[in-house]
Amino acid sequence: MWQSCKALLWRDVQLAQRQGGGLGAALAFILAVLVLVPISVGPDLALLQRLAPGLMWLSLLLAVLLTADRMFQQDFEDGSLDLMTMAALPFELVVLTKFLGHWLTVSLPLALIAPPLGLMLNLDVASLPILWLSMFAGSLALSLLAGLGGAVTVGLRRGGLLVSLLIMPLYVPVLIFGVSATTMMMGPQSPVPSLLILVAITLVSLVVAPLASAAALRAYLQ
Image 1 (cartoon, rainbow, N blue to C red):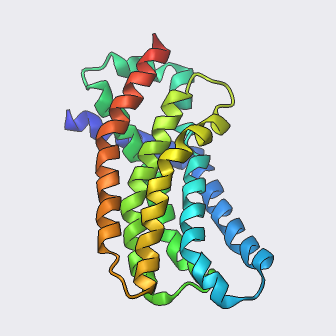
Image 2 (image 1 turned 90 degrees about the vertical axis):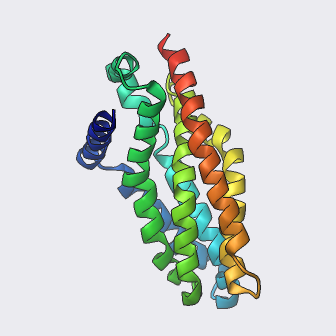
């Protein structure tokens, strides 16, 4: 079973590297936000520093959403998903493996790259470690929830906008506690409670998202 999961994960990682576009487009989106926001807000460095944690998380969230509809679309169109449902591997585990492939190729690299880019917004250097940690913990939840939206809309043409409308409310808790952890680090409070809640959200998503996504995909395939 684990060899099958490993083979499927390696397949998705290789396909993402060959096709390209996903990570590059998401990174270009983050850079565009970080360049345009200081121009629109003005040269107030104190204001930019206060806004930096929220803007970093918001740009990461939206960048991950850009790639959500690609997670199952190609496999659905070429019939690979039908074969995956007939494999010996439980379909929920197949879906979870595809989520992990998206996390490894898109969300995790963005979570590692984004915090240093926050220096363009006058982000406090001392808050970089906690921003890295919170984005690392929350990036998996972003991929899981984005995959849920991609599964629900896999049979719809131009479902990218619908994915955003469906998943955005589920992203709100991740955004709140991710930003809270970083802003508390910049103040007198401890960021640990917010980080623990962020980890809890990720663990709940890790259980619920594959089950719900597998059910939605089966409904489309039938």
